[in-house]
Length: 600
Ligand code: OXD
Ligand code: MN
Image 1 (cartoon, rainbow, N blue to C red):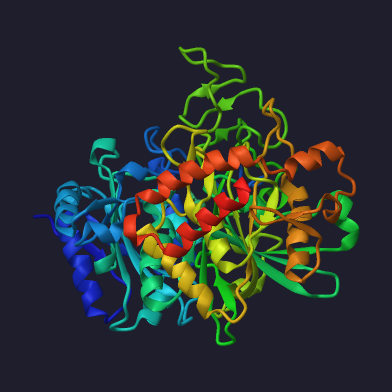
Image 2: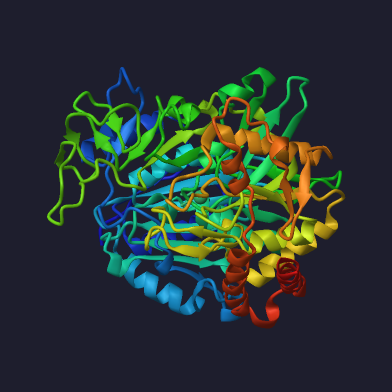
């Protein structure tokens, strides 16, 4: 057998070395390269990726340090139907996860990994989720044959020699193995073995399936660890809002994928509120690890170090900060390449360019149609940018605080054309947990499936909760009891439409008007009506200055239609029924009380 060439950075972690050797023996790469995270390494990897065609260098004057990647066209989103939790007992994965025994998982995936890296390099990426050295951070090692993954991981996480140093000779780490293999959907699996602190992902090159620090570790595995260790891993942005007097309040918000977390995390105050002098601080746009601080308050850390944001619809009106952030050192995936070496996507800056190369690598002009008469898109609807979070002008070094930021409010939100009003506040923590647990949203392009279909997506965690969802809710309830002052819990819906399907609320920067009411409520201010579903703002308590909204629209945005809610409660009941006796009694009681309030 050919000798594998190995370039290792110094470590005396014997178990780590042994594991890397074992995985290399399985996948049979030609080379094993340990990533040190240095700038020279980045340059070298970029050059190699450009030479192999995996990356295209963009115009160095207009977009310095930026590259374009085109994924295989069958590999553009997370594959929830191929994502599994592999535990000894099916009950531990619960009814909302796909399940396999660890034995079956290892066997099935081993057959796919076997020899999959022949002719390729295996990169060994030591990475840290959260600030290096913080007792709350978690270390992982990802082995991958994708240079695209290696380059993305160095943006999305903290990687290299400092991580290995912090791991020492015996530290715990999550074992992550990834191979693109042949990118066939027939041989694609995303497997989690929480009992072994291990992730195996094969047959995909798409971010959410392969950047193992993100959904796989920071949500599914971390959720499992968090329950054991008394903390929570959530699909939430973290945002600070500073008043001119210097008072900063931090909030977290959970929305399903592609529902605007990145936009809200770097919200730009609308014209009508500018005079109030708010400053916005972005701590995280996708994942929050929530812990109880020494002071008994809830604190949040962003375990990531970069942004992996959705591009379609992103422009300087919808998210100016993101557009500025991605002007350098950014990897664009599945967008249009313009003749001048810059990029474009539907709903991007300005009018569509006259021509370009579309995300599949074909010549493109506006108005082109496919054989079925459907428009050919310039960019995939789930096209993405990967950029260092520190490049955000709203970035705050509080992101590096190992203890995290104190949280004043938690927001849940879905994409609902009807039912959910613009905003409401739950009565207390227990009711708030119920509000999160009954969340529903219309499906987006971030996952394979029918876009637009309404599905229940509790706490925006349906695809990311790595254990039994009912136990997860019980954990939320238990955490609330341990908090000295549990943050208030709210629900928002930016996506309510009128009967003709037109959005009633302008969204984007104007969402700050709703956050303002939320912060007022946290301060014991902000007028509200007590309704069957929770506290709903009195129209006059929202600052709508500069917004051209007629009073009837505001009333409709805040209205609650009992009949619609009662119909929705039936769907909730069906959803809850699958959890059987494991469903916390408190949540069922909340559902019944809500029905009584709506019926009376
Ligand atoms: C993401 C997702 O990529 O939720 O953040 O799909
Ligand atoms: Mn996400």
